[in-house]
Amino acid sequence: MPLTTLPFPSVFTARTALFQFTVISLGTSGSSLVVGPSAHNEQEQINIVDGISIQKGSHGLKFGIDYRRLSPHYDSPAYRQENFFANVPFAETGTSYFNYLVSYLPVTLLFRNLGVFAQDTWHIAPRVSMTYGLRWDVDLVPSSSPEFNAVTGFDLSNLSNLVLLPAGTRPYKTNWGNIAPRIGFAYQVSESQRWQTVLRGGFGVFYDLASSEAGNNVGLSLYPFAGSSLISASFPLSSAAAAPPPIVPPNASNFGTLNAFDPNLKSPYTLQWNIAVEQALGKQQTMTVSYIGAAGKRLLQTAEIISPNPNLNYAELIANAGTSDYDALQIQFQRRLSHGLQALASYSWSHSIDTASAGSLGSGSNALSALNSNLNRGSSDFDVRSAFSTGVTYDVPAPNGNAFARTILRGWSADNMIQARSAPPVNLFYGDLSDLSNGFFTGVRPDVVPGQPLYLYGLQYPAGRAFNPAAFTSPPLDPTTGLPVRQGTLPRNALRGFGATQWDFAVHREFPIHESLKLQFRAEMFNVLNHPNFGPPDGNLDDLTFGRSTQMLGESLAGGNLGSGAFDPLYQLGGPRSIQLGLKLLF
Image (cartoon, rainbow, N blue to C red; front, side):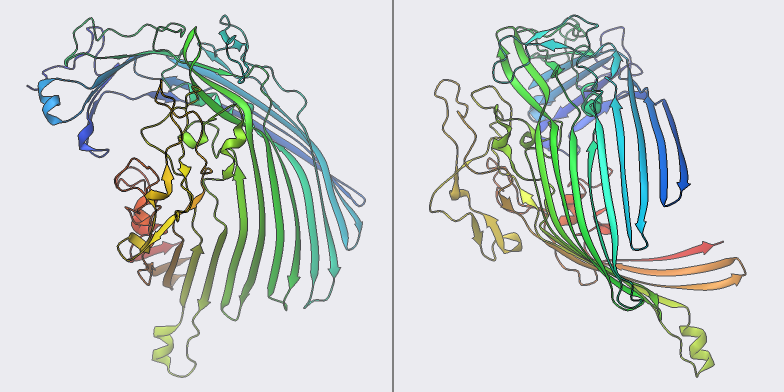
């Protein structure tokens, strides 16, 4: 029977609370009824940027300061009730699968960052210049109301002494020693007008924000910003069952999660270096070949642990546990506009490796699966080994003879863009296994079965290829808990999906109306050849569709759910062929 009023405790209404009714069997699209506000947020920002430049002889000096103060106000509904039902018949009878309740407090945050730099560009000789400098970055410890948690006993190898400290204790200390040197040079090897050669190179240290994960913790229904409970009761809930959960410190008996930073947290930083040779090919064309490298150190990574000690039920701990490495060979050809033709083409051959591709949990592959984060070290989620793109614009010349033909054909331009890339990685995991027996939450990867091919080929598979289910098996399980005793032998992001290729084309013409007024006509065609590009294969070994692509690439990049706020698959890489016409008034 339909509800006449929302099933909130008496002090809450649709203005102050959120109600969600979800039928799981209906899938991710159209399975939920949501009533009420999700949040009312405000952002206050003060940014002070200033700089001064001084030219003194062969030295160009620059000094600058960048101060930023962010004070966001995060105001969630005071109460949230989410009711989940396995299927429609259970929803009709009020037999809920589980009910999730949350109480929220309004939260005000304060982030302050300061950067100061000094730099000198020294023209050592007519063909040689060098740029060098220092930057000092300070990322002050964020504060909040209510205040962030602070802990002691933070040791991922032994969490038996992990304890929440009294309110008012700083979650970690401000790092005052973030001094970042940078140096670069440019040397003009050849001064020939048609064959100029320039050699460039550089090295630098770049600090990131230690506070970057702080904002992610506010909306997670965690103490001290919220209190939550998971209950089993028939729907609609009784007034006692629907009572807002108290906001109390987490312990071993309640549903709370202790979210905390390492008290010794340091600012993440990246070492970057590059060397490039730029070669002129005549007066209008250049070719540049570059080697680029980077190494990320002390990157933020989150560990999520069940029962870290007898006093706690759950913990999410943020530490400097991540690393990353990137190496790339990049080639670029550029032709400036000449005789109606201009072009830009680039190719990169690269490899990005890391222990996690995001600091927050996001997917299980980003979580620490054990004390040694190197067990997750593998190709980055966004790693694409080869990528090529080119754009060519040509102004079509009008014939000189026939006046009518000249009137019709003059002013037309054609644009071509071609993109091609190799396959990104796919991480394999068991959707029904989210924890190891050591308590660490992670995406559990499989063991590799010796002698079995990793891929299957045939016309029965989308794009002619699929992962072989027989090549993988579960890692050993603990007989008591039924959880894996270790991570699988298959490395993270070890397999690859499908590459992508697309050609887009456009023609346009401008019609002068007045001295400063023009009308432009455009006709654009995306994916001219209607080349099929497939989304990544399903990496969940517990799915019936495991190993096979179930979406075209455009739909996959749109989140697999049209109308979800992502780009329409018609207008991004991987969509079907589409055509659009347009008129634009330029003034």
